Amino acid sequence: MNKQLFTLALFEILLSIGISVVIFYISYSLLHRLFFKNIDLKGGNTAFTIFTAGIILSTGLILSEILPSITNIIRLSTTQAEQIDTGLIVKYSGLYLLIGFVASIVINASVFFLFSMLTRGINEFKAIKENNIAVAILVVSALISITIIVKESIALLISSLIPYPDVSNFL
Image (cartoon, rainbow, N blue to C red; front, side, top):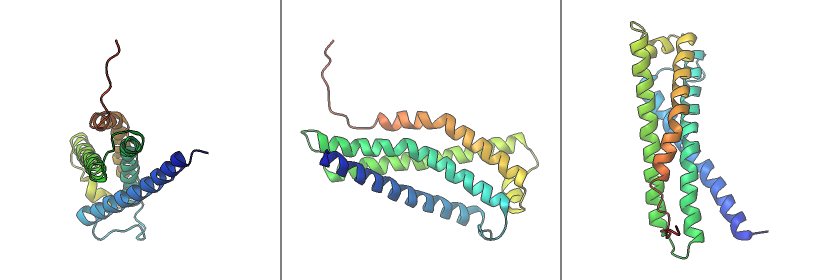
């Protein structure tokens, strides 16, 4: 058994769980505070629950593209002769998470803008507060669809920022 690889894998699992929990907590807290102050998951508002599930799924899809880049930095720091210091790992990880968070906000805002343009006269937030399940499902479907389409581009952007070691061109 490769002990270094095993330790690295355990660390990556714990890091992924920790980052995911923190990001989901922040996302839910912001959603709840900014838009749905008087509604919670205990209140029986199914539309809000569907909407929250869509936000969490969208965030999870984006995180699934970001976390491999963070673990790549950690792998590089443990496998390269030239050590990457912890501060640089934290800096890059924070940058990747910030890009993902901004991407989530942009995706959510664009979905609401798109939905508002397509359905004039319907206030999505008001409809979700009034437990309009149909509106919640449509908004979440658009949100998840756009997230699936955009997530590869986010992964490409983030992977372009990974400080890979220089490799000579053999051709």
